[in-house]
Image 1 (cartoon, rainbow, N blue to C red):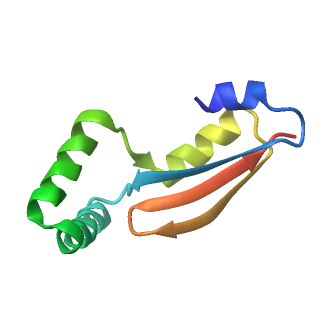
Image 2: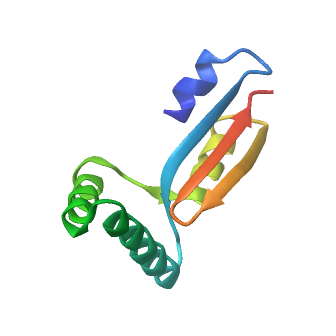
Length: 97
């Protein structure tokens, strides 16, 4: 997907992503999942939490933020930055040189 973004952009164009991310450290990943689960349960109950987690397992492929930033650089983006990270969500982006 990042390659497609890169090819579609003119020099100076940018891409911004807000995505579910994982941690490369198992203990941190477990903590992030637990905190997100607590948030979801508090929002709409345990059934909702279970529904969201099942959807993520079935339909999503979260990757570590560092992995995604490295991919942006690998496909050619010159400027890569983290805009914001909170628990298991991150906003990040890149600018085509």
